Structure formats: structure tokens, C-alpha cells
Amino acid sequence: MQKFFPTKASKAVAVVVAAFLVFFMFNLCRGYAKADVSDEEINENINQIEALQIAEVATIENAVAQLDRASKVDATAGQRIRYRRAFARSIILGDSLTEGLTVYNWLTEAQVSAKVGGGIVYADDQFQTAAKTFPEFAFFAFGMNDMGNFGGDEKAFIAKYSQLLNDFAATSPDTKICVCSISTPTEGAIKGNHSISYYKTFNTAIEAMCKDNGFTFIDISDILPSHPDLYAGDGIHAAPSYYPIWMDRMIEVAGM
Image 1: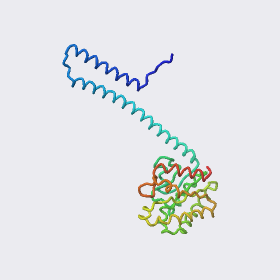
Image 2: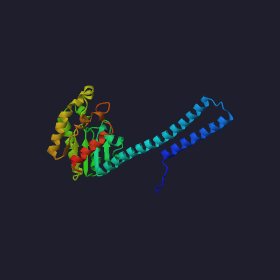
Image 3: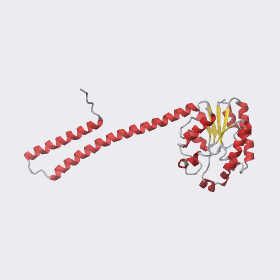
Image 4: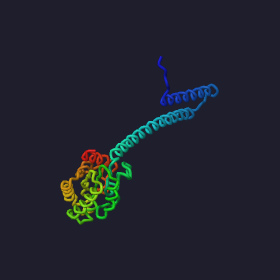
């Protein structure tokens, strides 16, 4: 014969039934001793039983909800482990959008070199420090702030960018250099900051620079427009769930 092992739900039902029987027998005895038990007292007993039942069910539902939340956290943790392993021999340099990789805990500080307002104008030390880690892959994601820093002059921007990248390659010649395009800002963001309206011109120049120097170009300009719900309120930055899409793109195009 199959043995029955009570679950939390069955225990809750048993508690409710037992409570009902106690109240029932109590009132039955009172009925023999005192025939004028009021409807108000009976209703109060029923309400207490119902309250007990609700409490037990709520406890069970809360436990189930906690398990559900735990499974979601574990899924995210699994993603983080996978990406950290994928980029274990890599470094990513960039601005505040890139900084989200560590802010949202997708990658470690050792794998990302980025800061708010980051650009290439004064990035010589940043590039050389990264190059001296001799990574297998190096990803670069600059340009959003540089459109303003260079006054919309993509030629001046590319001259500095290519110099930094070639210096990086000279220090770490075995590193595969991958350069991301500028992500696409919203029309609202462009209205508030005209300098970022040059993103298409700058991206064309970045792609040409990569072709001329043998770098790998990674176009990410379509990601946010394809997922508009991932835009942050400023129309430039992105929600945490943007980053797995971006990292998958880097992994795929770089051939990692």
C-alpha cells in the first residue's frame, strides 16, 4: 500500500478541520448547558475559523512565491556566471553605458574599464593600462560623449581613436581588437542634446576605421531601437536587461 506523506497544504486543511470540530463540539456542549447561544457568538466562531484558514493558505502561498523568486534569482546568477566566464580573457572599455556592465553586476571590475562621461580625449592612460593586462579580446565602446567633445568632427575623433587603438595593439599585439558602434539615442534625447545627432556619421567613420586597421567592427546601433522598452528615461542609457543582448552580440561577432 502506498504511504501518504502530508504536505503543507494538507496540514493546513487538517488544522482548519480540527479547529472547526473543536468549535463545533464546544458549542454543542454549550447548547446542552445553555440553550440560548446567540447567533452572534456562532458567527464569531465561524469568522475565527475562516481567519485561521486564510492565514494558513497565505503562509503556503508566501512559501511558493519565495521559491519562485529564488528560481528567478538563480537564473540571473547563472547568466552572470556564463558571461563572466565568456569574458574571462577580455576587457571592455567605454563610457557610462559600458559602466552598466558592472553597475548591474553582469561583469567584474577587472573586466570593465569605464566611467561616467568617458571619452577618448584623455584616455591614453586608460588604454595603456588595459593593454598591459594582455587580454585575448579587447572591446571598445566610445563615441556618445565624444560627439560633443569633438564638436561633431568625426575626422578628428577617428584620428585620435585610431591612434589609441594602434598604441594598444603595439603594447598587446596578440589581442583581438573589437570596436562597437555608438548606440542609437532616442529622438527626444537628440532634441535635448544636438551633439549626439551625429551618431550615424560617427558610426560610419568607426566602421571605416576598423576596416582600414584590421579591427573587428561590432554594430550595436539596432539593439535599443529594436527593444525600445530597454531605453532608460534619458533616451541614451539602458535597462539592466539590455546588457545580455549586447554581450551576446559581442560574443557572436568577435567569434569568442
